Length: 130
Image (cartoon, rainbow, N blue to C red; front, side):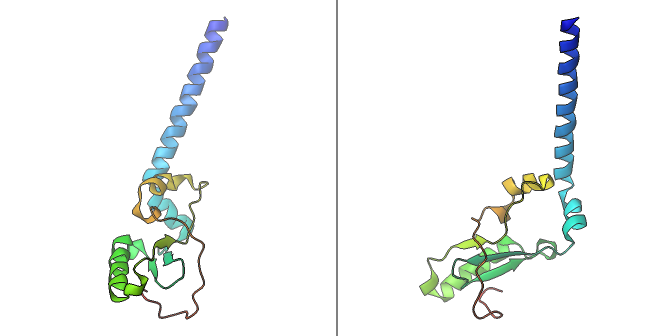
C-alpha cells in the first residue's frame, strides 16, 4: 500500500513539473504578445554612459535596436576622442517576476549591458546619440 501511495505521489509531482515547464516555455515563446498587452506596442529602452554624455533610446518595434545604438556610439567616440573610454549602460532593470521574459533576460543583446541608474542629463534635449 505504501509503495502505491509513493508511486502516485511521484506521478503527481512529475505532472506538476511537466505542466510548469510547459507553461514557462509557452509564456517565453509568446512573450512578445504578452509584453504588448502589459507594456504597450512601442516600448522604449534608454541606454546611456555613466556621465550621460551619450544617450540612446531603443525602440525594437520600430527597428531602433542595440545594433543601431552601437553604431552611433562608435561614431560618437570617433567624433569625440576625449570620450573614448566611456562605457554604455542600460538604465532599466530585469524584473524576475515577469517570468515570460526570462529567456530574453538571458539571451537578448539588450540585456548584455550592465545596469546603471539613470543619470539626469543637464542639457536635456540634443544629447549626442539621440
